[in-house]
Image (cartoon, rainbow, N blue to C red):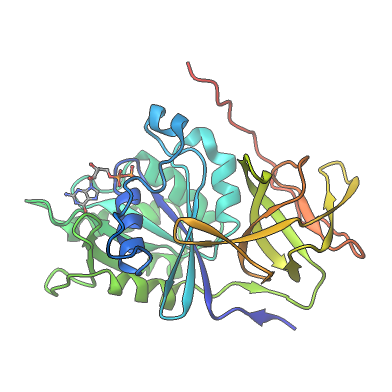
Length: 313
Ligand code: GDP
């Protein structure tokens, strides 16, 4: 029996560089009450990687989670650059919807096209956010028309072409359904995500399967795996099997299970199918491999992609 986790939404954010992903996520975080009044909102939440800063592009996917009206929205960042096509595909495989941010002035740009194409191929129906409407002489309605043209050109189906859209400003911290309405907050965007992004589908009664989407490292915990629980449950301390790319199996234990809350990772006892988690306990892992139940280890299909070369020239 399939169970739907009504209280979770998994969404990827896609945009051309500088169209305002970081600023928008900061606004969502600050308005979801994550930050205490006396705590400054850190800038560049999702741009914490040095290499990224140096190259001025978002390379590694980052996770954050925001709770709004009892729904946890897991937000994953997507690299916009074509060098990271493999990572884009994996990240998009972890979510059920995406938020496409487009600068009202510039309209869709090359990275918009690149990531949107992948999202449409995955069957996702994007929510479009026309950003930076606080700037003078913008015509956001034209930006929406250009986005629709791009959807059609990329072969979007009727449902995808009928995308929900909002106008707003990450910097100003507001979103609204049309240019006539007044708004001083992001509630319309939160509502739109909850309404239009389907809750994750996963079978919690099946044996555990989690696909490794991203790797991270902490001095304290060592190698950290980030991925979506596709089926079953995962519990802190449980025995689990790692199914390697060549089909061999390594046995281990989930030494730590972490969820996301704002910018923090918080320890969890358990997570169920549909959720995105971070786990420690498996030092020798590769992206794409599966963490599975030791009694019935079955791999999820590998996403075969060419990996980027991260050498700087
Ligand atoms: P990212 O590369 O997509 O993460 O873009 P950033 O969030 O870093 O934003 C790029 C630039 O656009 C920064 O200088 C921001 O201050 C600016 N910016 C972002 N959102 C807005 C907005 O809503 N209005 C205006 N006027 N500027 C914005």
